[in-house]
Length: 165
Ligand code: PNS
Image (tube, rainbow, N blue to C red; front, side):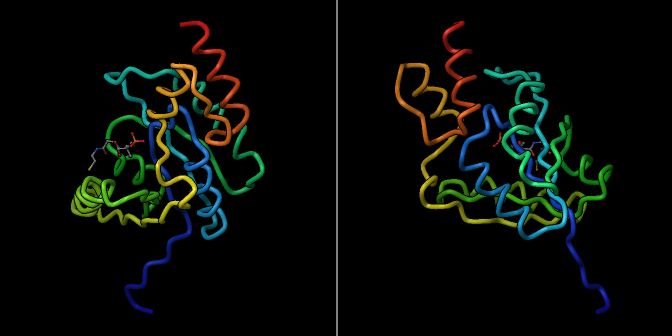
């Protein structure tokens, strides 16, 4: 097929501070569809994070260890540059609610305009449609229960980190 565009490798970018079961759901489903999924953690020096990039990468490695075709990496700068360097032609994103749509659409169109990088949206499992890393951090910080929302290894590191504060 002339001009056909086969997607074998996708990138799943984010802050993952920390990874939630919502992230894992998307990563696992993407791993079932594509040959290779690169989870790329954004190195953002201007944004205050609870976990370092190394810690986030390590946690992601642990919780995705069961998938042979998922690789964890990190990037700074533009996502489209990471895609070019790594031979990735499509980004995969989870869409939780309409509220996600506007900003995601804007980034998707901008990434396509800049480098013809496609964005593929996967609807979040409704179990996790209200879930976000920032809510998890806030609830955990004030003593709320976030078990079932994050993987067990993330839960124990979250408790440890917040106890240090
Ligand atoms: O988990 P997040 O913080 O919602 O992820 C946002 C992320 C990392 C996907 C987005 O901020 C991003 O792609 N940043 C890289 C910088 C970039 O390419 N900006 C231009 C986007 S059009």
